[in-house]
Length: 277
Image 1 (cartoon, rainbow, N blue to C red):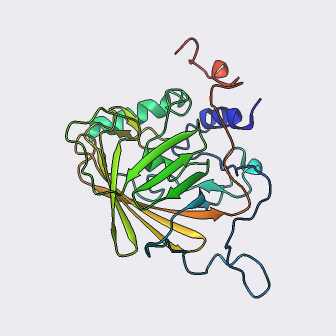
Image 2 (image 1 turned 45 degrees about the vertical axis):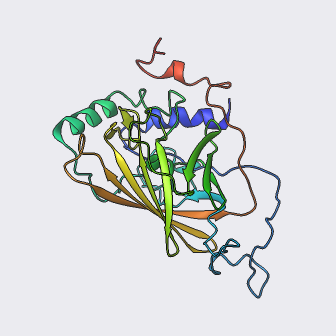
Image 3 (image 1 turned 180 degrees about the vertical axis):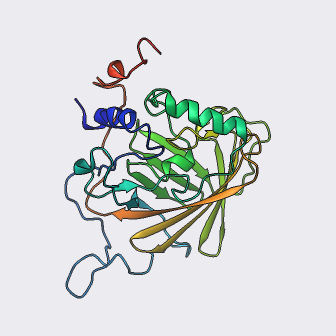
């Protein structure tokens, strides 16, 4: 059984831990990218200044993984999670300002053993969730486009930097539509056009078709990326709220091909999943 397929079993087993998912590293031949800054001792200098593109903008390109928190002592499978648990898209320390119907829906989703989680159904994840997921992401930056490649199901997201506006009546999608602009060394991204009924996190808090996102991305040094996401979804939350995620650079690995439905053997064992499609 694929390693990634085992994640499905883990998420189902961890349904009581809303938004916690295991961290796995990408696997590839050990190829060091060009231009890695070094310390005097010859090791990679992750604290060195962020690289820049020919036009002077910070270069966000690279393979990035979510920062983690220590695995709680009573958390299942801690022995399998030596690097800890990725920080979830909704702050661990603060409950989102959820409306009553949305809170009831999150409880129902959690009680349903997470079998309706889009990830378990092999569906794409939305941007806030991706920034705090177990799988790595690869950012490819050009002057007119920031391309985000996700290892899960070979997902992609396009963030246009060419000055276009957001669509006024978009066809709803999992990733939405995104445009960006630079303010100093910070990339400001605005997004709309999401499908209704998405999961904002693994705990089942909803994200609706009324959601708009503002993401601020800053490469604070060579090895660290800071992502600040403001969620404005008046259909599900009483006010906009902001979540911060930190990513770290992976320099000796790359994305691998993972297709959720390929050789997947866990869904049939989920309680109640039965013949769901």
